[in-house]
Image (tube, rainbow, N blue to C red):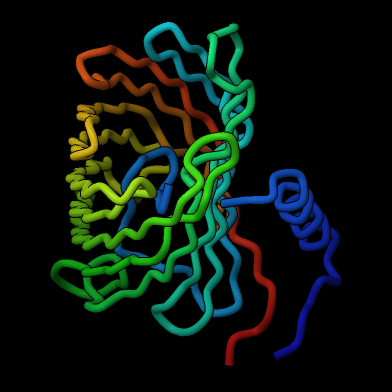
Amino acid sequence: MSWDTSRPNKRAALILVLAVMLAHPRTANAYRPFDTTDATVTGPGELVVELGPVGFLDVSDERYLTAPSVILNLGVFHNLELVLQGRNFVLLNNVQGVPRDRFVDTGLFLKTIIREGSLQNGSGPSLGLELGPLLPTLNAESGFGATAIAIVSQRWSFGTVHLNAVGTLTRAHDAEVFGGLIIEGPYAWPVRPVAEVFVDRDFGGTLVYSALAGAIWRVSSDLSLDAALRLASVNETSAFELRAGLTWTIPLWASP
C-alpha cells in the first residue's frame, strides 16, 4: 500500500480533513443532504468527505448554526467502508441551561454491501448494512450506544429510491426505531431534485416527523454540491433547517 499525495489538490484535501478532525475531537451515517443513506460504499483506498460547512436549525426557542457537519467514509476493502461522523451545533441565542457549543451525532460505523444491484451497475435492488457504536458527545450525552441500519436502494432511468430501517440503543439506553425514504430525480441529470421523509421514535420520549426537499449538483465524478430545506415536527414542536454542503472523493492509495 503506497500513499500518493503528490498532487496539490490531494494535499489540500488532506489538510482540510485533518483540520476538521483536530478542531473538533469527534464524528449522519448519512448521504448528503439527507439524514438517511444509500446502499453504496466508496472504493478501496478512497476517502469520501461529506462536509456541511454551515447550516441553520430553528427548533422551539433555540436557534443553532451547524458548523460543521462532517462524515468521513474510508474505503477499506471491496464493498466495505469505515464511517466516522459528527455535527457541531453553536447556539445563537441565550437559552438557560443549554450549552453554547455541542458536538453531537457522533458515531463510528462499518458499512457493507450485501447484494450488488442497480447502484453497482447491476440489476435489481442494492442491499446494504451499516452498524456500529454511537460515541459520547460533547456537552450533550456522555454514554455509548449502538445502531444498525438496513438499506435498500433501487435506481431506474427516471429516478432512484433508498429505503432505510434503523434500530438503535441510545446513549441513555432507550430503544429507538427509525424509518426513512429518499427519492431522487434521474441520476443522469447534472442537477437532480431530491426529497426525503422519515419518522423517528425514541422510546425515551421523542417523536420526530421530518420532510426535506433540495437538489444535488454533480460538478464532476469526484465532487458534488447540495442544498436542502428541512421541516420537521419534534414532539409536536415545529423545526426548520437549512443545509448546504459538498461531497468530495479523494484517492488516498492505489487499490490492488
